[in-house]
Length: 111
Image (cartoon, rainbow, N blue to C red):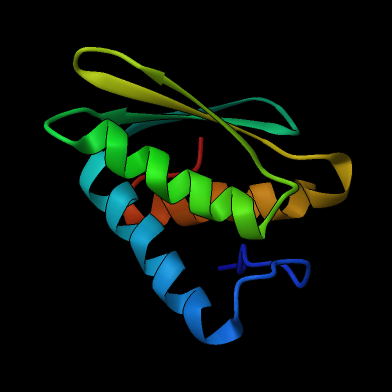
């Protein structure tokens, strides 16, 4: 499996595995669907629940802080949260790896 933490990430190396573990836990517990509408955009669907939106917002805000090439947009609903992830052309491989990681953590095949 490809790593999705690129060299351009400014998060200290020692903290990167912890961040990856946070994403893995979110994907394992909450990911119910994903799609790739185009090569630079990934759409994730997470189950909602008490405090989930706030947790997801916090995680993606911290990730955007160290990996500014990510653009995360949330579409919260009553039962599900859409997480739209976009990157520039130089980081397409990072998005590919994030998609693979999400699917693996959730025990799903990459669509």
